[in-house]
Image (cartoon, rainbow, N blue to C red; front, side, top):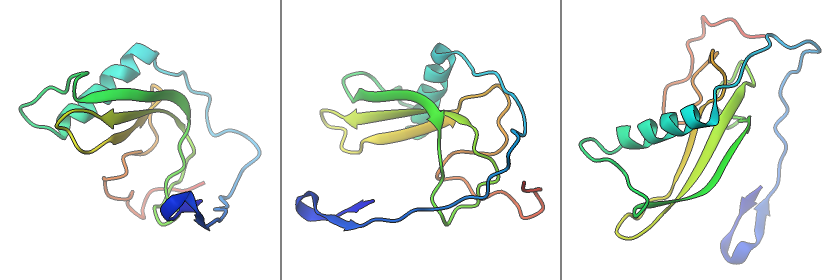
Length: 124
């Protein structure tokens, strides 16, 4: 769903993905505290030489689920992920949505900034 000004709906669509009947693997989720450390590490990686604080970012959401990348980004696996939405506070002006793998073994990168996986990677 894409929203326009004044919260009007500009467009709506559905992205279909190929589905198989059996799971590729059974994975164990990482502990939420470990996922929080991964989220904070990713946030700090975008701010070299600076450790983010609660005065700069207010946590709005921390959830586990499946994260679907945008339709123009190849995604071979729908894998568990932790999602953190952090609202900017004070002098910080850019809010953040950080996605980190939720399982002990990640099958592919979930970061929206990294390059797409190489074409040589087998897709199911």
